[in-house]
Image (tube, rainbow, N blue to C red; front, side, top):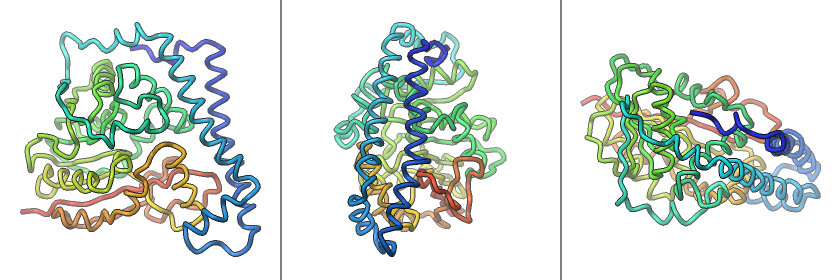
Length: 357
């Protein structure tokens, strides 16, 4: 399969570089300058709400706020244009191989919940589920969102290598909210011999995930299904994982997804979800909430307001915990995120275990 970025014109590549560097300077230059203005106002705020109020009065705040929203819109415009110019070739790549290693099962009758369809998540026009090209647009844009630090899916491999347990002889692993498969493919190498299943609402993402897995020679079973009711047998999975999916659900759907993950796990099986957690720094946490609002992600409050540890316990899981995750090199980092002056996502891993019978 060819990659859209392999075919970019000079003008398209220049546009990508501009948005990428705008995003970097927003994170490593504008945000630190904003924090300096904030510190000059006096004692740090004690709560996220107070920090947000003080934040919005800072002289640099309009620039900080505007640049975050605008560069995201610019990102999707250039990604969408680049994909549309190559639409016919890209759609042709999604044709199913004659001798597939894995499987693709789509469900045209699957009812997509309104909380999934009512928002253009990440400001991507039409979202991720609207047509086959939307998956290519998201794949392209996600690289810039991650500041090109996840090229080759280094970030997802780091999560797989450092956060997921060793399970010799694992027979089944499930990835809930697998998208276009970037979080699923590393599981094949981590658990050789296991059946790897990727579950997602979006048929376009699953078509792309299947095509790219086949091109890489990876046997993965992709299924269009609701992560809250996957249809997979109970007590059949050694590991159930998900990457950046819970924060895109309302509170009740988060709870139902954890309950479903617990149902799927074998006794002794492991749950691992890579998500976000508040850092304890009111200013930084206020900017995380604002990021969610400017990025059309309305359920961050639901994630942060849910006691996931208690939900795991209610679902019959034990040893539930959150551990910070450093996406640069460390992966799981129990000592915390460290002293980072730039704006960054507060990644964290939710871990729990299903008790032995």
